Image (tube, rainbow, N blue to C red):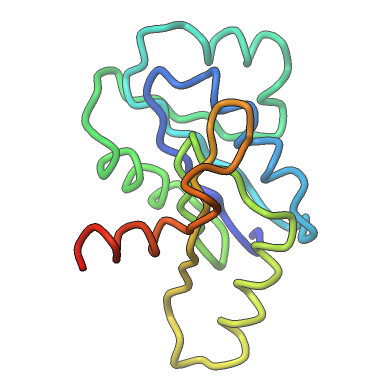
Length: 144
């Protein structure tokens, strides 16, 4: 059993998935498994990544047709063997100590059963958008 299982639903996002996986591989906690749930992609990108060995340390699960991100997450959770489940979308990147911080918070207080965090919005070059405001700050401004 792994300490944590990263569950990544994806659909035709191979071009983003590589960076997502790199951010998981850079985590300061290495006791983890990664499950990618291909939700019926039609672009052939995951097949290329698999042939190139980029998915060597990943469990790849496939839906024959697109069923939506929620179904893909459920498929990943059913296959996960980790003590903790980490949902991450294929266009997300994690800071290197994300998993370490999450586990410390969860283990400090058994009453805490869910860990979530804020995020910055970046462009395709990795530059921070919206003047560095976090996603939650932007949503609060929109919704007042």
